[in-house]
Image (cartoon, rainbow, N blue to C red; front, side, top):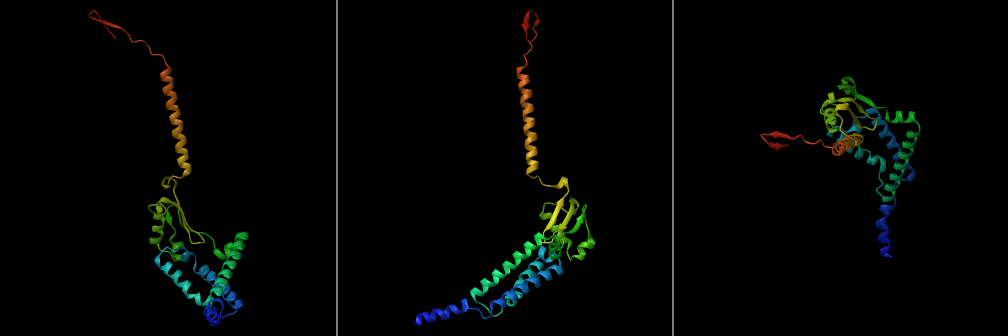
Length: 217
């Protein structure tokens, strides 16, 4: 019996939380809504993580809100319950945003154009708190040398930076390779057909000439 009691005492901190499940659910939902609002207010810069500063903020943010979510509860069941609540709330919000376009715009915002026709929109970049050096690096990362090779650079609501290169600067894709193969196949067929016609054409007899009593061809 002593062993059973010892095992029970050892497992109690892991299986029994110090706060009610209702309170844990409310804590989780409250922190989720708070972070969602904060990210909406500060804009897309933090989600884009264009610099090491943004990464540091996101890592510290997770630690800052940790105690607000779990409170004094360090149990395994409490953590599992909190994770389930968080995933459930996020699933509902994402599905609602996907179903209602206005809700998606309200929660995430709309795409922001940072460059157009090869020129940065300086006022927009400043308003969003972005650095030209970070944006130039993002353009190079996506295949361009600089902004002059782009037609549009857009910062999506989720933080993704989409670079649309001008047509002469775009990399070849599957459709380009397929078109090249088709053109090469057509050229090969034409060369083969020309070779067959030349092979089937009868050869004219070579003229015979006489030089000093000798015949030559």
